[in-house]
Image 1 (cartoon, rainbow, N blue to C red):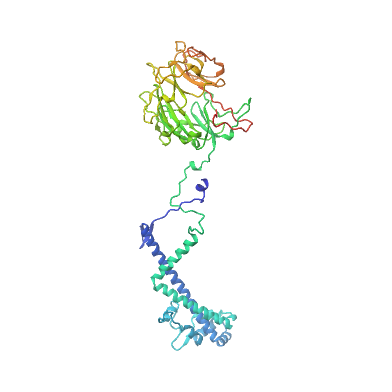
Image 2 (cartoon, rainbow, N blue to C red):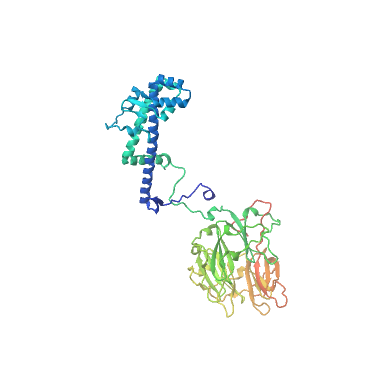
Length: 558
């Protein structure tokens, strides 16, 4: 594709349908253009014939003079020898009238069709009547003829050369007859045009015997920027504060146990890697905003960066409205990159509404984005996930309740639908997290605004029907306060605790005890007076890029 775009391996030729007709530019249709072209070719053939006729007449005139000289060679040699200079010899040759039987025979011409010969047809244009063959049978030499005789080489005096002059003269006369016939008969001009076009077609056209290497197409495909991007696996990172960048997968390698690894990206003290995934440069990334809109981003459009760069704010890559921000980023890799109809986007809002839409509903990208879920006044999107119809979905409210149900309890619906109730909420409560259960080995980590939290096995969250109030996830009390976060973790993960005062505390999940659902939890972070815990997120570390050459798995890049 780069060769097609950057070189003349593929080129575009425009056709200008404007022609000069009677000296005026005119926009022609195909019929008009053909007529104008044929008229132009007639003019070219006619002017070329006139030019060749002029040359043939001049050559015949020279041959006549040479024949006169050969018939009177002894006298010619005498005059030349006795003349002191070439101009004197030329003047002497031109002053006499010469007799030549050979010349009279040469000048006795008859057309093949029996027509009368007009001597003027064979005379050069502008030649004075004083020169040439006169009625008395004598011949007067012109300046051109006398000059050619003076420059004639001695070898032309042989009998063989005389025969050549006579033969050439006959050929020139035949050529003059043919050229005059072309000028007299327009149908011959048309025949010549047809023969020349046929010759061009045979030499340059696309024939079965010799096909062209270059194929001429009516409409060549325009190459976009994406067509020039080589398919390459990239590591895409998204930080907590919204900085996104991509790096070639070749810069990352899996390490053996005990390897220190390399930092995935440079982040500020109050930032960390929130998402890291591997995708092809031609894969799509679906970006959902809190207002329920979806924006598309190709991996090749993600700014490339080094390990030491932060990347580019993702909010600058979309036409977001005031107050709108990107909250969920979903890469479409593997089979999902083709938008199959057996994959779904599952979404949840803060008011407990859930919606499942087939992935192929989002296969038509638009620059300005589209509405993924129609939100009620005051509602906003809190989560979105890519599912295959075989997982359980979990919703958590800030009131400490959780509901787990089969995603098939929600029927697929179109993009314009509002969705159905996923969780029944009490007055003043809202959904703060949507999780998709992947396996039963995970735990659910919940945290409250007063700095307490706990880790509970996902097995304890039993499946119930959609639209219920749910079960207790963590006891809400005066000590705990509202639930602010819930996420799925493994024992070897690390999390970041965030307070509304900007304090960050990083801790290992293994240091948090695993407790039952009905307990109040343990202290996760010591808060200052008046401070509240505002969020909790799992840290995605890049543990790749070591000495070994085993690449990160595409199925589980984290």
